[in-house]
Length: 199
Image (cartoon, rainbow, N blue to C red):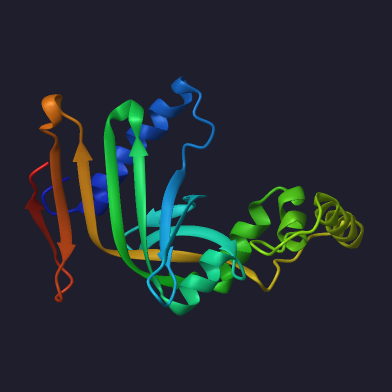
C-alpha cells in the first residue's frame, strides 16, 4: 500500500493497529471520535461519537436528527473529526462535507443495535430540555410497552451521516515535539495530494 497516495488505506492501517491495542489498555470505546460541527453563524460545537464505518466513500456515525448536531448539519453540512490514540501516540484529523446515509443503511444499522438502545432512540428527545430524569424513564416505559413484544422500527428522526473528507491530516508523536505531520488534500479532479507539514 502506498501511503503517499492513499490516505484511506493509511487510516485503515492506523485504525486497525489501534483496534488491536485498545483492548490491552481496557479502552471502553475504541471507536470513539471527536466530531465538530457549526451552526449557521459559524459557532462551533464538539462532542464524541462512535465511528460505525469508513471507506473511500466517507466516515459514518449515527444520531438523532433533531439533536444539536443533527440540526447544525442540516443547516451547515460540513464537519471535522479527530481521532486521538494516546497509547499509539498518533492522531488523525479529517474534514469535509457531510451527506446522509441511505435509509437502507440506517435501517440495517438500527436493526443491529440492542433492543434497549432501539427503544432509547424513540424515548430520548436528544438535546432538548428535560424537567426531571423521571420524564425520560416514563418515555422509556411507554416505548417498552409499545415495542416490547415485537421488533422496533427505526424512528423517522434517527439516521446517520457520512463525513466525506477532502482533507486528512496524520500526526505521529516524536521526541522534543519534532513530530511527524503530513496531510492529504483532494484536488478538484478527485486526486489526493500529499504535503509534509512542520510540527
